[in-house]
Length: 193
Image (cartoon, rainbow, N blue to C red; front, side):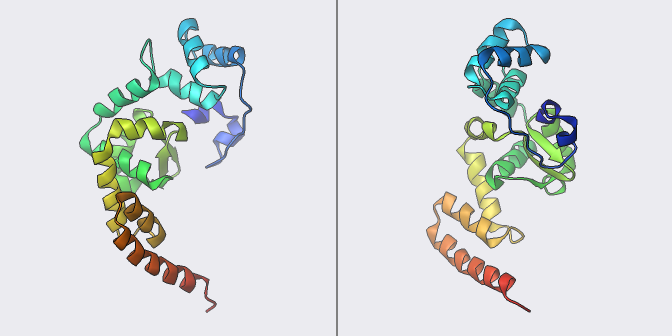
């Protein structure tokens, strides 16, 4: 988990971020070596991480030997059950944390064990934004389209998020209808009582 790479105080604070300047290749190799990554693999990962320690730690965890990160994630996603893929796609589409209970605690436990999500209390999210593009490729458009449709039609999801989902689906008519609802909701929420 990336939390392990954070100082203890930051790891205990939900949503805490620790800004780290890009590391040079040698510092990156030392960081990877400290986590048990061997020399050849550490050098390859350090070169591909562009100085980003979080990305390097993710790549080192998923990509072993000659497998690049994208292929390793694709293999990992293929091993997931349909329920786990559905939850992963829902997290991807949401673009931020969701309640683990909404996705299924057992599903979240499996995704956590696979190293694909992080937890903060009852909320879960993708382990790192750097995985968004390769996860989209690994999940495929069918899973993402289904997740967008579910998000767009779920009444509990705020209207503004539903508008975004309909737009991503290319359904401008329904997005426009919901946009009007979102404007009314925002106006009512801001109106003095």
